[in-house]
Image (cartoon, rainbow, N blue to C red; front, side, top):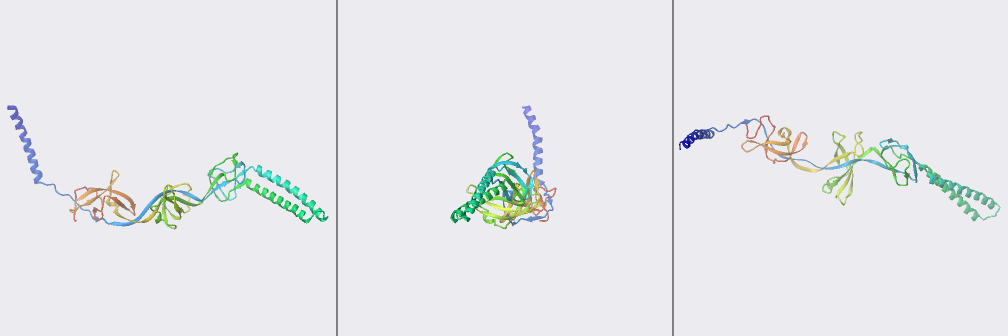
Length: 341
């Protein structure tokens, strides 16, 4: 019994101290901290709406070079990346078949020529009729035409560049067999470049020929302006997207094959725009200080969008009519009261 009384006596001072602290807390409230910062009331503004699609830079003059003759490639004078001028030699084909045709045509021509001279003499002696002579003369004319055609084929044994450009693909090599219509080289002219991209059927009605679009390229620090040159009026049956071609300005930094992001304007949309000074970034998150009806500040996270002329879009977290601190001060914290408002 004596031990229990001692323990109870030891607890009484502690309970008295807690009661004293509780009375102090109720009688001495924490003083409200004020901060002098201007408030702004948010309104939704009309800004251009965009859709972004990916594409690639292509050459308007992409030419596939092939041989018109069958034969083995004797020599390819260019490599991938080489720049060529119109008329430069690209490669040659060993024209074995054509030479045989030329030799046969020459033999037929000699035979037809000899017959023509003989029948001409016989016609003068009235030994043959005019009709017989005309048949021989026609045979000579046909032989002459075949020889000319065969000799003309020889010019295709040496293939030359049809335009100025760059060799971007080399599909066959020296010693390979070239056939009519089979690609050997691919040339591109980098002087006339365009972007090809595909746009969803949801937005295609807002895109027209002559419209301007913004194109972002990895090689360019700033977007470049492009003009819609063609909207193909038929969608891909699998993706339901439309092919759109845009003309690019001639710039040394832009090359065929580059990846491009195209931003098309498709109308306007309502969005809340914040001054950059009102947005605080912490640990990768964006937030603002919102004032309630009593002008007490409360920190609120937002989802920030694009930067527009030094301001920031608020995609989520704020509503039209909200009041926020126009700037973030170093000592600002939730619970502070805005002075002078």
